[in-house]
Length: 205
Image (cartoon, rainbow, N blue to C red; front, side):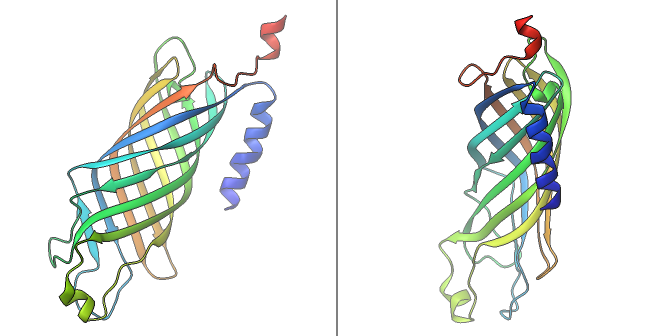
């Protein structure tokens, strides 16, 4: 939480000379893994998915060509997510909510294309066995709820004129009940600076 507040404070400083806008973020996870807390069923508490993992959500951003800050949220659905060891049902859904620092090309506000990188932190709510939960699992007292983890993300990719695409990896952990998550994928960002743009002081000289 302290890290997120620090990023927001930096955002207020950046706001004074930069641009502000809204946008859209989408992702395709090449692989995702969710580890639920231990239970008393004796069955596997993890699930993974490498197919049909898609995410989409809104973002707001503030910054300039070389550096920007963004607040992003996604709904990510893995339709075929399952536990290969002990099948109990299908589907994984997760909701990452993050503050991110975007450098160089991943600020995606320069008319010249550049490579860049990003760092993010926040929280994620995840749930496995989203549908078709087996009756035998429920009879053992098994159930699935949304589990919260604290996540960090790093990405590297290319951006130009309000668009960027980058490879990312995200890891999350909750020390209270030993739950963790891992995501590896490709994220696409669409910034719309013309919707709510603040001109820099230099442009008015």
